[in-house]
Image 1: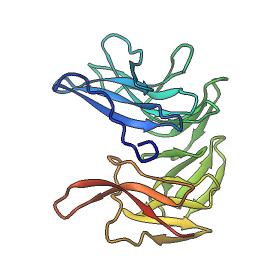
Image 2: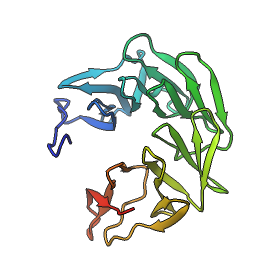
Image 3: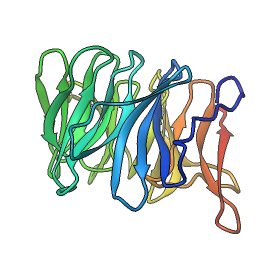
Image 4: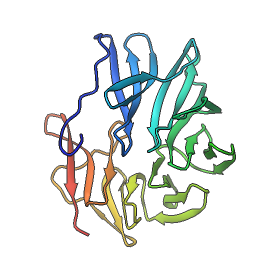
Length: 248
């Protein structure tokens, strides 16, 4: 969607192949995966300005793109098709060679080239330029990278950390996050799957008859212009993308 105009991504040309977007940057670059139904196989892609590009993936492997920064660098995962539970997190830079580190789930990549990811036991931030790695003990899914901040739930609440690993804030009772405004004054997330806003240290539930669905299967965000982005379900269980406006 660009200024209210819907843009359709090209189809794969076959009913046995699906296209699943995962992220889009401020320049309109879309990344995700091309899924081969019935084969348990996928390939990461990058779409920009009408050009569809499959990202380099080793033979016999599947891949998935999870995030893209405003420079066009893409972070995702690669795994051997015979062993899908053993994965590497990879960065496909806009120019240069692919970087690959043992891990499990890619989270996102900042414009400064720091990419966040999760192993089965911890979280990490790696610097693409230097290779330096910072551990985030106790980090777990779901973890979100937004406006250079990481969010994930702990026993103390929803932790917000800088990409250096430093603790910025703990948002009371939070169990989920979609992100924050660039100023950091508003955080959009959930408490026990109830959509919630935190503002100036106070949290309150989203007041709407049509509630944002709290799920890893659906995209969510909060904009600086005062909109919550998400999905709601109708009475029949149908899914509908929507915006909610808040006054703060």
